[in-house]
Length: 238
Image (cartoon, rainbow, N blue to C red; front, side):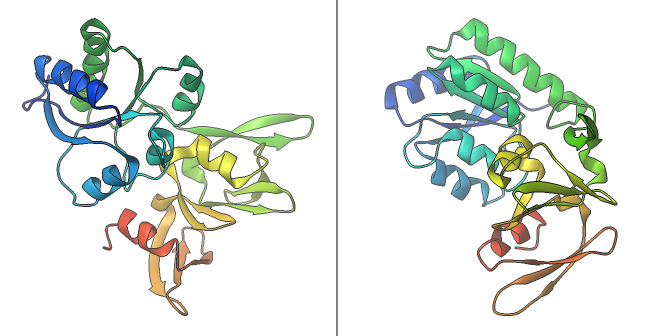
């Protein structure tokens, strides 16, 4: 285990469950840096830039679910979803959750999760290793393309297209579906655009609050006024 105790944020809208989970985490040697009751509070806390090693998010929170929160984090954090309902597991792992705890959480099961988080911390990684790949259509079948080769995704002609040196038709039917699968690996550019932040080479001001973003490969795309603040925050531009 690394030098400092794991610093964790807990978001849970039921006071009893919140108290129970924070008690178990503290008993396991974690430092609980924030106890929050809804999704917007998580975003607000994270936007302050304070140190945290992992997020424990309840899936069924009012307004924004834990899945919603995880899909739009300002930067990648290891996420552990906590829920009473096992059917959420598949969606949780699609969003690259580090782990998944079913209520009532037990100390024994939590110990396994914490061991996994500490191992990741030791590796200096915030998620599973290995390149992330996604399926694109090829003839009668599909091929898997590495996300690292891709600059952005666009919804047009009733399909989601990936741009990876060429325009490739993915198997996703909507941008929301792509966003759900890609999670924090992409950021919204506008209603029909997702951008991989690491492919951005430069940013300049466009008209009326919009941004123009230059990508690896030379493309320059417009980012909507609504999406600009989150994208700037993700790039560390305030």
